Image (tube, rainbow over all chains, first blue to last red; front, side, top):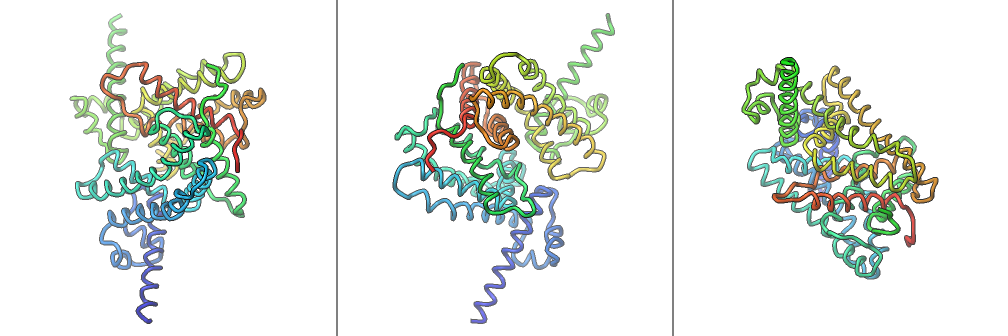
Length: 214
Length: 214
């Protein structure tokens, strides 16, 4: 039992470090963040960080992974719910957007990782680690595919190229990580109101060509 | 007249440097790019770069400004064309998206600048220079405002919060800078086909709530 308590403490310590690291990476970028910065922001020693994460690259990778873990955990169970596509899509999209807002520092780290991958701006070992995370993220994107295709089949969605559509949809749904800033006194209803504007916009895009004059 | 020729040569040299620098910054980020990299990619000396741009920060700022100059030049004349909102919006949006695709390295530099501004990750002098460029970019965003409002008035657009809508619209219209890669043998028609899918998606978002079941 004492082991159980020790494990719990270690776990919460690890979670604290990931949260602090996410904020540091979000605010300073990868190159601008040191293990020292993360330790300082926690009021902890560098040793405590190194006890859990052997290097900055590892810490970054684990923040990225934790961000994606949270998204999978929230959205994956919704993807297999039977029934028509539109209400399922709406629930998945809403959950995803709320994730972007509520876990913003983690999601910004995911984005920083994507940009580093696009640039190839890392060592060969880091590139391999990053590639695995990028695949993990791409698979997440595929969670929406079946619902999009079903919706097109059912006539509620109307779109041409699937991969362009997926990009456009995710850019819209992810965008709060760039422009959303939590406000003092904000309620859950305020957050949901913003999220549902994002979902409505993304849905409009999926509903395709209507009376558009050219 | 010989002065004219010399000026022209100087100008084209400056344009070459800006183009090469945009590509370097896009591929390596701000921190990862040196004046040496830019010179090497041009097969030029560092001296030639320094002749035009006193520092890396200046070079970066001028690439950012050039990217926005091109956008203004392409879109501003369209913003004042009289008539109904929808066809004007469509023309502005299409022109903007083509800009994002055709001048992608410059537009990625604009984006890098926005992220640096958000992070405040620069010296005080660079922050001031960046703030001016960020304002220049925000004003560009405002070019679309009147058309959006007119479209809402005319009943073709339907949206709630104007500033959220503007963010969502621009994230969609800008998104090719992240996922579009020119392909060998691509024709103008191919590019326009991709751009019009982006415009259709963005327009769908603006057309607001339809038969969306909740």
